[in-house]
Length: 435
Image 1: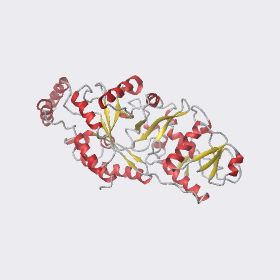
Image 2: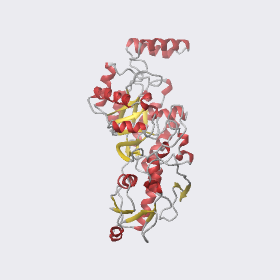
Image 3: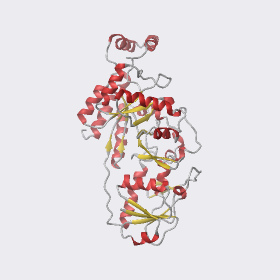
Image 4: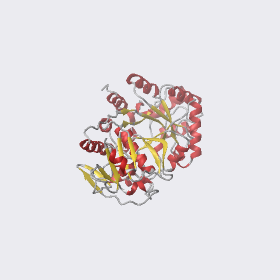
């Protein structure tokens, strides 16, 4: 156990200390506000306060963890050896307040501030402090914590930390379970006419043979995904989009009995979560409706959720999820940029700054997806695989959680996805030690 003296224990102090020590360092921490207790304790200890008590290991505290609400805080960057840091403090055994800086990132403090939105009414990734200072491509909080551990061990050689285990779980976005099958006749008709007008005769042939003659839909790759899962024995979660057709939601109707049967079948072999519809970002009732649709299909409670297009409004979307008693969100990433939105790959609890409380909702960072590699970075499968493996290895190095996002159609036998199926398979093999 590590004893920490602080002059005041706030909800923010309790939240970030317990996350860093319990979840990242795998070490118990205890607080005291009594100087006598702190002085009498003979084990590893340090003070976290504006001034040191004496000659103890000391981290000078930034005011952030003792404040409430949101303030415009000036942020200046410096370096701890080669690693960028902010909230530098001069009278301290490490050069910055690691707890305040980590809280700033994990709470998504910057997303509460007035900011520019992108074309989908999301927080624009270009606003990100981490991106602006070239800190986005690595789990900076894990890096800080490793350096902090070494500093503590230099003062307390008897201090031993357990090592976390790397965790790998791919996520499958089922935003379009079928390319042709199960769509309305009007969508089939207009699609066929468009194929002919564009002289896409192979697509016309395939569309008609799937829709009219029962050929297997190219996006129906779920048997292959389960086959790979069974062979390499890795955890897996499917996220199903169950929304009415809209400009951005193009999935098969959830009223189709065949589709419901398939969802239920998949839920028997892998975890199942909800991919919220595009417009649910502003509508808690719609989120609840979609959850109930999925629960009625799989006959199980839904605890996992992802926002379609990573379309979040912080804190509102997470407040909806928490109110609906959802336990796990997998949207903490950007659609346009590979990396770590909150500076970490380790799951963490959503801290609701509006109410100054730690919630029961766990946020699971997602750093990369197949769609991002193909359409944002414009990579071919070979280069995409290299980037994907590199990103996973960074997370593995710091014993984090790697959740690459794939879509079922990455295994489709179509020209536009030619060789991308190997990207999926090689990623699975690599991180289940079958490479």
